[in-house]
Length: 178
Image (cartoon, rainbow, N blue to C red; front, side, top):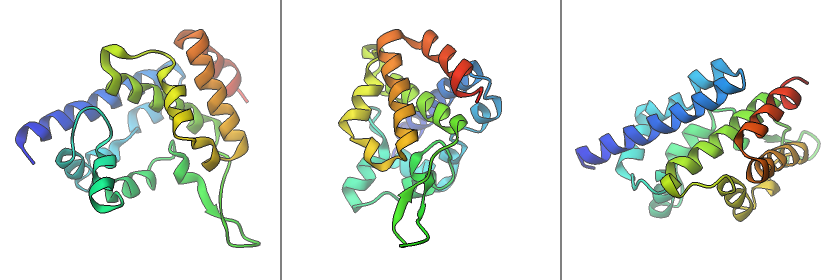
């Protein structure tokens, strides 16, 4: 890992964190905006991220390709409630792993996180439809609780069709006021 990779990784995660904080503040989620992704600065996540830094996608994917899994990701998802993977638990009657419905404030943060990631990785090519395109390409809904999937997809489609201002307004008025 080079010094340049360390610096570029730091810049990337800090810019991403800034964008999420800005989005969370628009929604009145001040604590979440400040605390968002702080685990990325921990040695477990930071140094792996710098080692696999490419600037065009998550370094966790490159770590996964090399080792078949990402220890940095497993660390990250277990500490950050805006990731749907945090909300998977054993179903008591049969012991199967099932998604749990995410609280609205974490779905809102997940939405902001996905928009920020699209902006960071797509740079000047960013479009409001990037986040829904990425979501659908990954077939993510199959891993989410039904209600969480419906809400997230609704917000991502609204962003693509109506833009950021209307989507943030909708989240403030209807999603976070429940």
